[in-house]
Length: 326
Ligand code: 3EB
Image: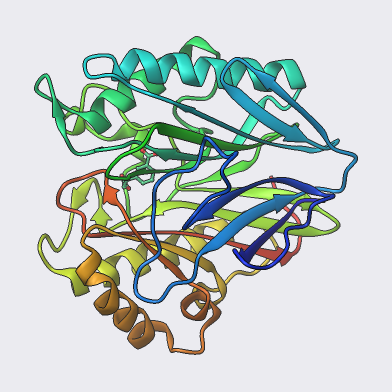
């Protein structure tokens, strides 16, 4: 069985069954693959952990450090991406990752977290996020991974500094990909957003075992069709982002008997300008109520978002009783 748990950094981890965790706030010294993302507006330092049922195996493959039980694998890698070599470095990193998945038998990436330092900076006339997309898509295709329909849920954020970090949750069976009917699939974005499209699905439905389903929603922003909406308007962007999350939940309900609701999701909220954090929190309170678990347990983090005109992005996940329908 797969479990997700967000804990305060001060509480103990589920040491025996932990597959891996991602720290927001100060990370343990031995975690080389920790993105530099700091909690905002009173958000506590947390660790988002994934646990299985054990017994656990642990190992390395190239740059990738992984832990798995019989059913699930969590992996991470970190590397420098020198100026002019971002795309090939990302391609090599992802190829290492896919080799690690193949060698361990967890060939299906379900959810990917990408942290690309200075993601909006220009390098040789192309934004670093677009270089990243080039290397990522090339690796997916070269490794025979689904690069379009069926690609994993993901997010891509930009810390100010640090190494490029990739984290993965993988399984032995594929997730069921979910798209957002209000948005063009990211893997079909037109080339005005870069020479290669982003490689991710809007969400993944995962049979977590024990009669439970996990809904893993990718980074979600104020995009309708393929266009950014409400440029320069923080409140409009938050509203549109929540409408998109609602649309993804609705789409997921056509593929599972499990029922999810916006106010019960676990939110991770990325805010481009630290000074917007209190406003973003107030807008979430207005929309969902201060007592909604999504608001109460939300973590707000400072990060650049992969379009310069996006001010906020929310990723979310939830677990409910039910089964995934095909
Ligand atoms: C978007 O909808 C916003 O490149 O992996 C969201 C989630 C975004 C994942 C990625 C990018 C990614 O296009 C950006």
